[in-house]
Structures are given as structure tokens and as C-alpha cells.
Image 1: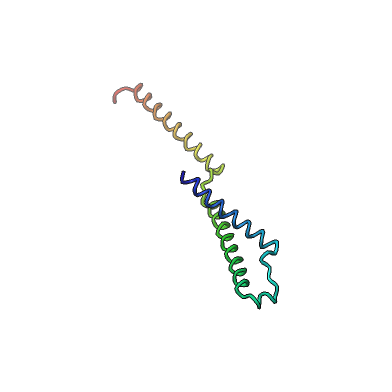
Image 2: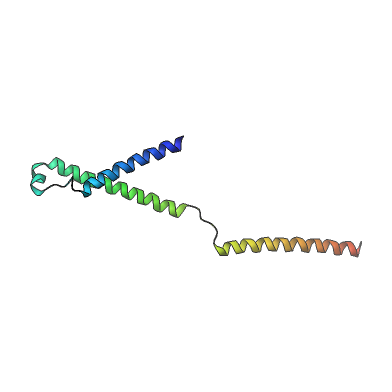
Length: 110
């Protein structure tokens, strides 16, 4: 149940950010030079909004890159071959041990 709440939370956050970005791209938050001088609070709001969107975007990019780097991958073909060779060497060693035991049995007591 915890996972679904987390997914729901981040989905809502992403939807809100996408809506804000669409509003920004469609110039809903665009201010003319005269309105910047007339309403400095709106200008500050627009700058803070862009800064927050940039920080959240950087956070998501950072999370994605960290996940890609830290997620475990499979073995390389070279490593797989080394593991097969290790198994083969173990089998050969066991066969050699059994052959030596048979030879010792045939020779009898010393």
C-alpha cells in the first residue's frame, strides 16, 4: 500500500509541474517591461516559479542518472566466460581427484 501512495504523490507533483510548465510556455506568466516596474511582486513570483521548476527538473534528472549508474547490471560476456571456466576447472579437479583415488585403490597398501 505504501508504494501506491508514493506513486500517487509523485504523479500529482509531476502533473502540477507539467501544467505550470505549459502555462509558462503559453506565456500566461509573461510580463511586459511596464508591468514589471508596476508589479514587482508578479516579477518575483515569475522568477521564483522558473527557479523552482528548474530545481525540480534538475532533481529528476539527477535521480534518473543516479538510478542508471547505481542499478545493478548483468555480467559482461567476459565475466560470464570466466564463471563458466571456473565451473569447468572445478569439474576437472573433481574428476582428477576421483582418478587419483582409483589409482591409489589399485596400487594397494604401501
